[in-house]
Length: 469
Image 1: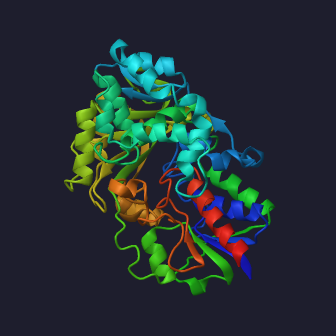
Image 2 (image 1 turned 45 degrees about the vertical axis):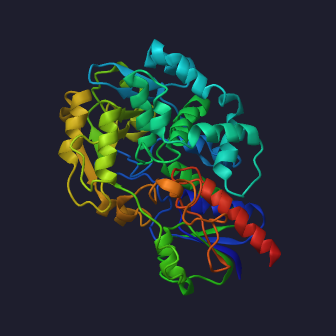
């Protein structure tokens, strides 16, 4: 009998398996797809030689993850590559605000009226960042805070809606860039704790950047898999699990799946019926005949580029997708240009590029024209660079990754108490009514992103139980 079986080979499932194997437990992972990776994969989606990341491509949370930093992933081929700027937010007039490694450079891009405000916002937390991110991403009850005073101070700043924090800024550049940071988790700007989301992304950039993985996001998943194998764990792909009886006997079962899939497989009935899924996304992967022709110079050297003319336009796009049930006319776009940092992703002189906008959950329309009209506002001539495109709306994204219910890449709405307490209002979010079944997906704290911390935290709950039995 195995000590633990993990269902799902995404970053959280693989991290949970590694953490258990490191502590001497026998572990096997079962993945329905033909390759490991979940939200961290790399495929040739458009043309031969163009290596695209179907989901996550830039990794501010991965490089700052306490779980990943404690593992020797570089020994297994993971290399982080950095663009000149982690992120840029261009404006229609050709200027841009930036999120740079330097706090000073970032503050200066907002203009003199907001530079000091931004410095006062982020500088108190940077010297304690490693401890803060560990405390922030380990909650709840998986570890005692190492610096409760800084965590409490961060909570006072971060728990209010981002609209409150944005009132500190006087000019639109700072407000718009911060609104875009919040929109990365598809959260309405007025939602609880969205100030914390924006702050985490900003602090992560100043601490270690927003890099890409050399060769593609698959490198993260492959490194975790290789480490797990060296620790004696096993990974089985092309193995779909429909019920617990499909799995070998084990003392614990750990699911890197959506809560609804877990309830169906483990026979938990209506236990997660109250869990809410958020808006979906419409994503386009491009093969380009050269770099994106951004008007703003800063955008040409940034790994990630946010697209929204101002905070009002971003807020309207989020409301349309999350509350009004329609696709926005001018979608807020998150775009990543990995080739700026990693020339191995495309043939010489060519580039890979992706963009996505938010749409209602389960939306079946085509956002391609709206996305490209937005890109043309900030990069005139963009369409002329397109060699091929691969589009994926909510149905296609859900087919690629069953955790993306209705195209929700955050694996659950970031709204209300569910922002922090997910998938149930519980102090023990990784446990289920079945004493041997646990959940470790992005539907559990600390939420979405490629960082492995949900898997790390869930593994603690699992090994504590295994040592008691």
